[in-house]
Length: 298
Ligand SMILES: [Fe+2]
Image (cartoon, rainbow, N blue to C red; front, side, top):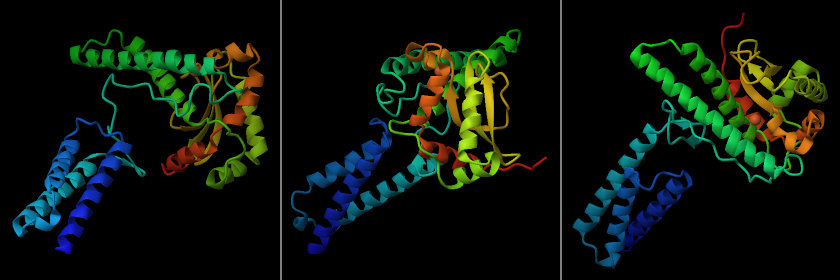
């Protein structure tokens, strides 16, 4: 009988463990898998005294646990695995881009970037890129459906403008953090030293590139999967002068909305201060993933 009791205890623990996991992965409460887990919980809770369970009831319970096990396996195989993170959605449907939440509070980057800038930048500017990208994707889908491409030039421009705006800002939030700064380490530092000579030489080049962006735009540290080295680029607005076929690793927003309320026209001070909030761990992770891409060199 003790064996039965131990088994029931194991099932209860397992059930709790899976629920904690689903919670941590933000799996929708309406998802099938929650329903199945809750069914099992009901069964377990219905067992008032495990010692009184007969052979047949125990077999029944075992069967239910086995089925749930299989369901969970196939559920997680269907979800796309990226690194050790399971993604709820393997891709973004047409016109369904969403504003990503900031990985910290609006005031977290103070005194280097004020709360007011972060709030406006995220909720107004980034949101408008998301909306513009969704609108462009939907209109291009409509053009494909109707076979009417008379406005293709306009929507392609919108797609590039808002798409780059959405993707670059999404990276921008992630590659900053409170109490950041310092230097990267590991493979990224090695590549920086190899290509730019030293971290200081790279930092000087990136700083100068950011300060000298014509009008509004970005400074970007990119990895070229073809040349297999890093590079520093400037982008006017979001998409002009962009070197395609590269992957942004570190990006700095030098649009006026990113600093003007606090720094007025002193972009240089903003760029200098920005180095204090770089999240190098996030940059290293981007580099690790990006550098796995390899194409034939020419
Ligand atoms: Fe921006």
